Amino acid sequence: MSSLYRLLPSVDVCLQLFRDSLYPHALLCDAINAFLQEQRSQIKANKLTEQDLEKEYLEKALKVYVDKALSSPIKKVINASGVVIHTNLGRSVLAQEAVEAVTLAASNYCNLEFDLEKGERGSRHSLVEKDICKLTGAEATLVVNNNAAAVYLMLSSLCEGGEVIVSRGELVEIGGSFRIPEVMKRSGAILQEIGTTNKTHAKDYLEVINSNTKAILKVHTSNYRIIGFHSDVANTDLAELAHKNNIPVFFDLGSGSLVNFAEYGLRGEPTVEEIISSGVDIVTFSGDKVLGGPQAGIIAGKKEYIDKIKKNQMLRALRCDKLTLSALSATLRLYYDLSIAVQKIPTLRAMTIAKEELYKKAQKLARILRSALPKTSVDILIKENNSRVGGGSFPEDDLPTYVVCLDFKQKDLVSAQVLKERFLQTNPPLVGRVEREYFMFDVRTIQEEEFKIIKELLLSII
Ligand SMILES: *Cc1c(COP(=O)(O)O)cnc(C)c1O
Image 1 (cartoon, rainbow, N blue to C red):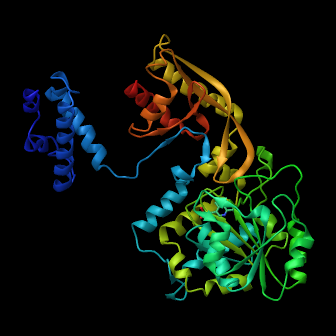
Image 2 (image 1 turned 135 degrees about the vertical axis):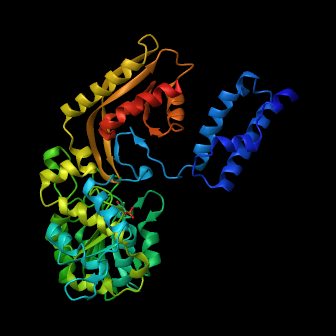
């Protein structure tokens, strides 16, 4: 066993292998030491043979180890899950136009807060305001860090110390860290719950309105639906009821779509414009959900309320930087022509891609994988399945799709679960789906340029 230890190279010898790399010396030494320590433990545990420690083999393992330890912590991931807006995978992929706008703003000075006409200080909030107003019919808008910040800022600016009425059917939790009752507590507003989980009537609202009521808040039940014996009050009726009592209606819309997807088979999500025209005073929604832009929270609605929110000192802490505003501005501009928007904004493209096209994509991926793997070891099948929009949008709507399934004959060696785990360790990692005995790639969220990479990844892990 002790002779095996002698086969391990010195740190200096290892360093020579990375002569041409740009890794900082101190980090490189740490990674090499960690690698060598791991080899020593493996030798001690009798897990390595002389063969495993051959120079060439060891060098390759060291390179893989060091690259993994020292490469950027943010990695490209191939999304084969079929969930279009996958919060864990960074939600929306930006349109090329938005990427270019970010690059321009990142590598130059820009007029972020500078009015070029007057030659004096301007407002960053005015950069996207005109476009959002045009696209939603709102009088005024304000963009902040994300939708959670938008809801918080709205409530803290307009409702602090007063009561806000919310139906019990809408006291939602979004992904663990956003719960309406908690956000409301933080904002200083007092939650007045009404109705029941499944039914809320106009009279429930009317019964609790008093001189300390500041607003009615509607919350989009983003990630669930109440079906069956169920009713709530229509937006127009709610706005009328509220305005008669001199209070505003706010709507946390969550996903906030700017276009109607009914012609693409996606129903049940009202557009921001529809909500605003129904009389709702303020709507808040995310920039990186169905809108397909960067992380941001958009507040849109009546000027008198937006002006008050703009005066909140906390706005400074929640405002967006030049990169976000650039990406958002470029994304919004694509919306003036719907056919361009669904083509150029990756989130919209993935949501609306035709089924025949998905089938063609699946055939192409299957062909590439079949050409690399022997038929005797694996069946590569194309099956119908469902994708999801995700991001708390269209929770009821399944999107019919095609998946490419891997069915290895020797399941004890390469089970679907094992493939799933190994794909997370590849470079780039791939997030797929496991259903019953199959590992599958949903082609809806995979870019065609990634097909060849997937083949290489698969060959490297079996
Ligand atoms: C997603 C969502 C939020 C949180 O939005 P972020 O942009 O992630 O901060 C809040 N409310 C609703 C209804 C949502 O769907």
